[in-house]
Image (cartoon, rainbow, N blue to C red; front, side):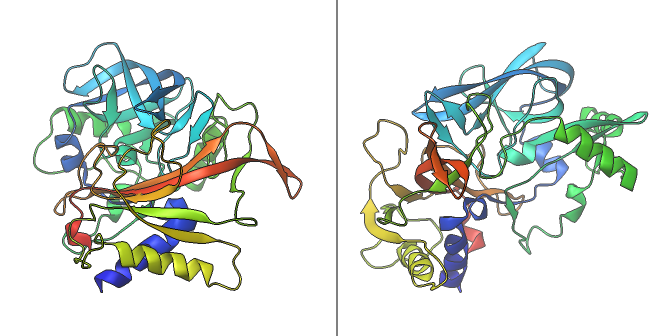
Amino acid sequence: MRRILVLVFLAGALVQFSAASSYVMVNDADLAEASSSIVVGQVLQARGVMREGIPWTRYTMVVEDTLHGQTSTRLQFEVPGGVAEGLGLRLYGMPSFSRGEKVLLFLSPGQGEVRQLTHQMLGAFSVYKLGDREVALRHLDGAREVALPQVGERGRYHRPRDLQAFARWLKARGTSEADYFTQLTAADREEVTRQRSLRPRFTLLTCDAPDCAQPSALRWMNFETTQAVWFINDQGQDGLPEEGENPAGTQGLQDAIDAWVDDPGSTINYAFGGESGVTNIELGSGFSDSILLFNDQRNRISNDFSCDEGGVLANGGPFFALMPLFPHKGVQVRRITRGFVNMNAGIECVF
């Protein structure tokens, strides 16, 4: 059974990285408890930064209301992925924000004074003005939800929240959740769609970040001429059965590769490169192939997964070059140079 789960997970993740970006929903009380600060404010600017050899997007925001913890009137927070120094990294499921956007954020300590989102995409809400009320919504585009029996049904946490009522509960948080969930009418949903369309975002399989000269699709360019080689980290994933001298998870990766290569309707051409001690995927590391990483050894995911509470199971995505652009079927595309899938620590109960 464990091998089947790994195969299903990896077979999707290798070609569609959004299948790698996966989570088990966290309830609001646990999300708040895991956060060092919770704030409502407005995004002022965003810029790409290269940190530890990979692109991040660093946002500056003005804080309008602090619901938990200590913050200044302005703060910075980072989201992994973005564009910096001519290199792009698209991490599926990660939220992006535009200048002037109002947000509700659950934050955890990051590097120095720069914060990061608690449980990554689960810690970010966009705020929309709908008539005389403000509503907080999560946008989990590009990420896949996984249900765990021990966590229970979490469908309610996808619902919109009345910002004022939610903020009151977060400030005076007790053991039970208040009735801050709300409903959206068809007109409300149309208005959310309209407002969201005015906010430029880094969308699925495109590069429309501020540093990109022009929007374009991302594409593997080497399937027609050669193979994209995938390696596996030699530490293996905690919770997966041992495979002799091979890292736990090796057979799952090989089966996933074979499933795509043997598919007669697919042009995907992967190859298994064996195991590697590489944990750093960053620019300048000397490693230029794709890799499956285990146990989030470089702490790229802000919080470990909890089998009781949930969280991010894994994330992944492609690195791509900003220039040059390549023509493909009448459109300009940017070349994916390599990819990775990073499985979180603490996910033993999933397998």
